[in-house]
Length: 263
Image (cartoon, rainbow, N blue to C red; front, side, top):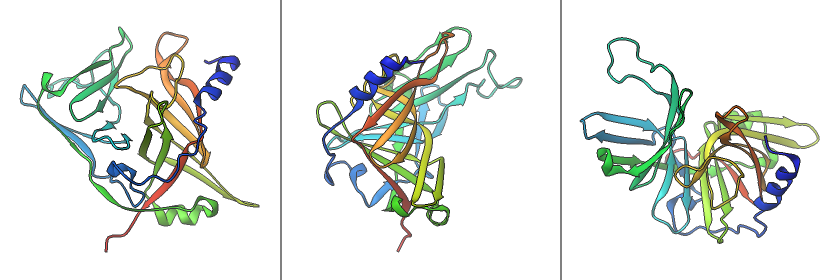
């Protein structure tokens, strides 16, 4: 785990300082009135051996003014494809996909031989590779009056984080909200715990965390609209990897979004 001295350094280093502003232009992911449709978004491909596959999308990272986004698929356990006997591989390991328009990366965790992450152009392994990223009309949820009734009426909820990179570029990070708590006492309070999501390394430096496809994988925690805590994927004390590397991003803009009914 990160020492208190290192943690303090990370908190300082991750501060983004200047206001993010209210930019609307460029990448479609920057639109406040649209959100990625995570219920329908998927990555599909055909391998050169003729095997077709599809993988759900669970998070995106889009740099404003750039045409390409980064997409994350969920982790699954490796299996013996079309096998006739035991289907889970032995020894077992999990893997997941990070994809751009032209390249992909695979994060692997193998308990017997250690991590075996890889990156390649799509054409190295696939005869076709497509990213389906439909969007739907969305409306922001007012967090200052958020309660369990609002959550129920707004479900499913997604989150959008807007953060400045080290060179001033604006990133829009989107993901479905997996877990949210609310409390109405003297004032309304909320806390989102979700992930894993994509955190581009351009946004924050996380010491000793693994970087794959130009991103960290991290679980996110936030209960205010200007700050996010992270637990990023990286080596642990027993030489395996886990979500143990802490960092905090301040000066960020967070939004909760609900689906706008079709008209």
